[in-house]
Length: 80
Image 1: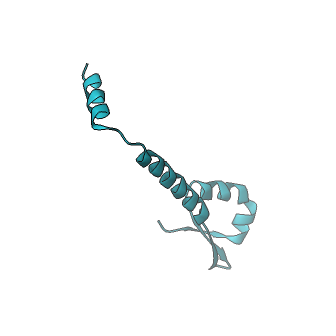
Image 2: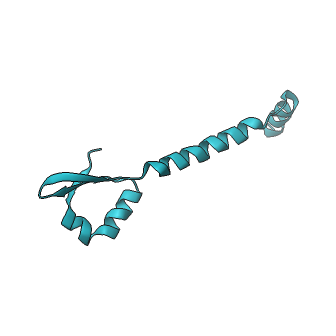
């Protein structure tokens, strides 16, 4: 998605709103006198921390093993 262009003046007067919109994934190209000078987007460190949580969860689940007998017992119990 292409970032929405906003002026520095608009950013200054609507900073809280713009920040909330960035937090939910929207991105902005900030312009000064019509020329892009900066980008406002969700921090990459947030994406990395979410990815790390997902990896840790997968690794924790992966360590839990189920024997064939437990699996068959669970399947039979589910059919009742």
